[in-house]
Length: 492
Image 1 (tube, rainbow, N blue to C red):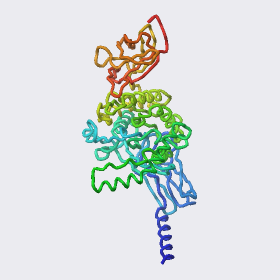
Image 2 (spheres, rainbow, N blue to C red):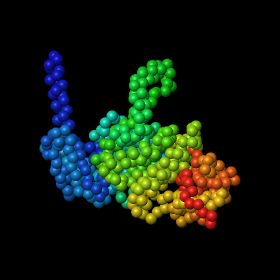
Image 3 (cartoon, one colour):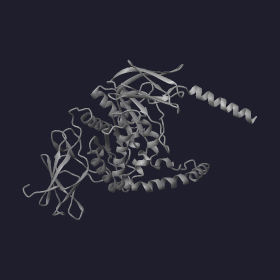
Image 4 (cartoon, rainbow, N blue to C red):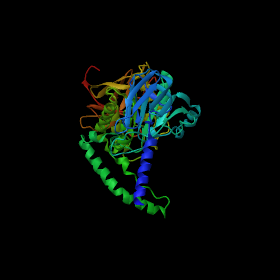
C-alpha cells in the first residue's frame, strides 16, 4: 500500500506540473497598464526547454523556457495607447492578456495612510459614485512578507469605476485620477501597503546590513518571532473566556526586509514611471534613524528597478497630536522628509494642514493625492503648474532679527489668516527655542523674539499638530522646517 500511495502521489505531482503548463505573471494580466517608452517585459512559467512565442500589437518575439521553468521576453518600447492583446504560445498551450493599455505605472506604497480606503474618507461616497475612468487601472498587491525575495505577487488589474475604487487607496486614487485627466495618458497604480510598518520593512536585507542602526531591529525581530507561538497560544486560550482578547501583533510587521521581499522586489521586472510614498508615523519613535533608512530605501528601489532617476514623491506627515510624544517626534520625521525630498528626482507633498488632531488617519485624503499629482505634473510631466508652497531660500541674521526669504512656488507668499504669522520660533546659540513674532513683507518673513537677543536658528510648524498659516496664492502651504542663518548682515 505504501508503494501504491507513493506512485499515486508521483502521478498527481506530474499531472499538476502538466496542468500548470504555460502561464503569465499576474502583473501581465487582463486590463494591465504597461509602461510606455521603455522595453516591455513579459514573463511567466512554462515547460523547461520549450519555445515561447509572443505577439503584442504588431511585434512578435521568441524565447525559451529556462531549466527552472521560468521564461522572459521583451518587446520594443511603445508610446501611450491601446487597448492591445498579448498572445503567448508554447507548444499546444496558449495564454492571453486582453484590454492592455500602454501608459505610466505608479507605485503607491507605505503604511496605513497610503492604504486608507476611499470609502472611509471625506467625500469618499461622492468620489466612488463619480468614478468612471477606463484609462485608470488599479492593482492591489496582496500582503506578503518573506525571508527571501519572491518571484511573484498576487493580485489583478481592475478599471477605476464605482464598483472597484471603494477599497483602493484614497491617496492613490486621487493622485492617479488627476494625473490621468491632466495628461490624457493611461495610468496604472500598484498599491503595495501594510499598516504600522517601518521603512526598514521595505528595504532589502543586504542594504540594511550595511547600516549599524539596523542591528537592533534585526535582534528585536528574532525575539518577537521566538515569542510569537506562545503568545498566539495564550491568545487562543484566552478567547474561550474572553471574546475581546487582543490578538498579538504578527512578528512580520517588524521583520526587516520582509515586505521588500514579498511586495516590492517581485515588482522590479515591471517597469514603472515613479513612486508615491506615505509613511513615517511608525518610525517617529526612533526618528534619529529615519534619514538613512529613508535614503537607503529609495536608492534600494531605484537599483532594483534599474532606474537611477526614478521619481520618488513623499508625503510629509499629516498633523496629529493624539499620542504622547508626537510633538517631539513628528517634527523630526517631517524635517527628514523635507530634506530628502530636496534631492534630485524626489518631491514633497505637504499634508500637515489637512491632518486631524485626534486621529492618526485623517479622512481628508483628496488634497494629499492632488498635491502629489501636482508635484508629478510639474516635475515628471513638465507642466507649468504651481506644485509647492513657500520654501525657504535664505535665512539672514540682522541684529536681533532673522530675515527668512521664500520661493513662493506661485506668484506670491501669503498669510492665510491675516495679521501676525503663527508657528515661528527662534533660538540663540544655546539651542533653546522661543515663540517668535513673524511679519510678512513681500517674499520675506521677519522673525524675532524678545527672549532671544542673538537668534541663529528659526523653525516653523514644529509640533505634532501645528498652527500654520503661511501659504501662496495657489493655496499651497509652506512645509514645517528648521534652518540656521546662513548669512549675517547689518544692512537689512
